[in-house]
Amino acid sequence: MRISSVPFPPQVRGSLEERLGKGRRELRGAYRGTRERAEPNTRAVVIGGGIAGVSAACVLAERGVSVVLLERSDRLGGRLAASAGPEGSPALRVAPVTTFPRHYYNARALLRRIDPELVTLRALEDCVVLGPDGAAESFADLPVSAPLNALALIRRTPSVSLGDLRKLSTERTRQMLRFDPQKHAAQHDAMTAARFLEEVGLTSRAQQMLFRVFVHAGASEPTALSASELLASFQFQFLGNPEGLIADVLEEPASDALFLPMGRYLKSLGVEIRLGTTAIEVGRDRGDRVRVTTHEGEQLEASGLVLAQHVEGVRALVRASSDLGDDAAFARSIDELGGGGTYAMWRLSLDRPLEESREPYVRVAGMGCLDAIAIHDRLEGESRRHALRTGGAIVQLQAFAVPESRADDALKSELLAALHTLYPETKDAKVLSEQLVRRADAPSFAPGSFAARPRVATPYGNITLAGDYVKLPFPSALLERATASGFLAANLLLDRWDVRGEALYTIPPRGLVGSLIGR
Image (cartoon, rainbow, N blue to C red):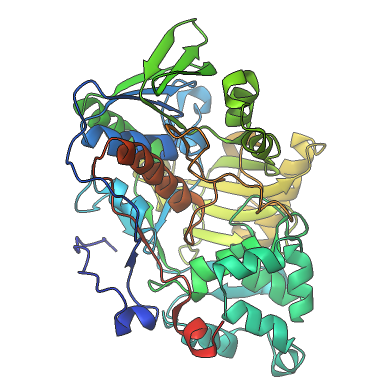
């Protein structure tokens, strides 16, 4: 199903619709500048060419700032960039499935820069979780307002019986329903998500089938994830989400459909994109200037700087930059950032198609490391064309929280066994070609980490942070958090130059449930 071009509706703050948890909300105070464009010769450097860095560079350049974007790899995209396929096969380039849920307002606003009608998006019909012994959960056709969505899910789910409901903790259930972003961070950050779900009283089956989607908003197991992050994810992705859980997916790989045209768009705005360039040190000069040294020894001077690398990259740069160690609390907050567990993506070219009834993208619970199955020839044109030529299928298996000690062959065997169990028609399929990619560049939201996690603003005024690890003043996650943090990072610099920033939008942070039962 195509995504039609529907303009954003006018937003009335404090309206009944907003109070009922429907519609987006404009973030107040996202920008304060009054001028439309920056003064000539205003220059900014953005380090990192993933979604956060691209978002920051886009807003800055649109306001007339001269931007230099540094990316150490040979392509834009960060974690969303596709790897090189084996044997030169584009269809076997490995990359995460790039979804744009309807409540990712800021990510979709970025996409509209290069695709105003959103014609590159195609709707997924359902959000499905598959489990052992034929277990399945669907999140389609639910009401979009809380608590009706939660009640409808509980009423129809096979994972929770009437007897199970009687055993639920009233207090823990109330805490989930009356989510408050400030209070929950203080009350539940030290607790693991696993412990919180146990204290709710949910069975292991219900925890896996109903909360897997929200736990794996980060690449961690429940035992390594903060309960406050779980509750924030549950609020943002489901309970307070006024659009429903159904998402849209890019019809081509993100490298082709998003980052190639975005690179052209940035260049049309005058952005200087330097691929294969690593920033090795940041200096601060008197007169409100920053200085970035590259691995080639070049020094770039600018009025503002956005650090938009992943966790390991920003940690290494701050450690190497003595001028960023003046504020001990800031340096410590960066140094203590945790990386998420290792995750893996294994793309297979099979010699036969899968059953027509299979959903193109599903989550998986209770099947070892396997977290998701994507049938890419039903998602992306590139893989579809390959499958038509071979008569087969392109399938990608994704695994989170993979032990570093797990050998590739053992991991593949576990993933393949799970695929055969869930999709028996693949047992007799021959693997024509395959590629496994293992990475460890996702952020961690470990118990007890919230208070020290850095925000977009830094003590150094004209230096800002962007990325999916930063602490935002509103609910967000994943691609949306990276985009919104990039917008905010640009806005903070523009504020210094009295230039109007980018409007940001989010879901109502509390909605009807919190309003009715109070704080």
